[in-house]
Image 1 (cartoon, helix red, strand yellow):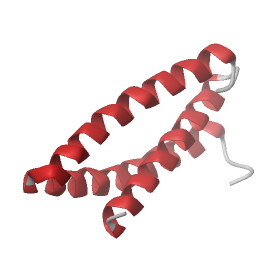
Image 2 (cartoon, rainbow, N blue to C red):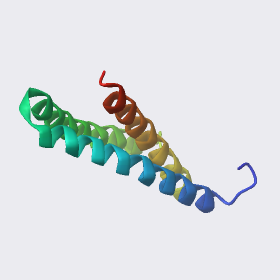
Image 3 (tube, rainbow, N blue to C red):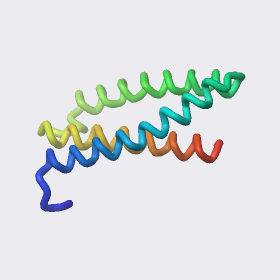
Image 4 (cartoon, one colour):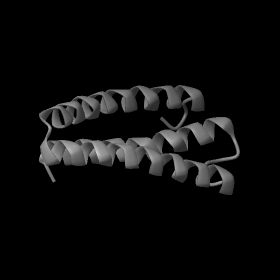
Length: 96
């Protein structure tokens, strides 16, 4: 993808993230719906991850770690979420 326009690349990344996030939403919904301690722990984990992500991205934006360009910041934000979402998918599938 080296020669592609940055916003086109971002669009593909967003689409891929959406696909991965859909599977995580489904897996989390099943786990939470099953209830019990595991479901309760998953709900708590989900909330704390959202708060942590918001804080991390704010820190990155304020320190210039995201990028100075709009497309660069968008791509780095998508990469950040892709890592988190894929880690959750692996954890939810393997049960670890």
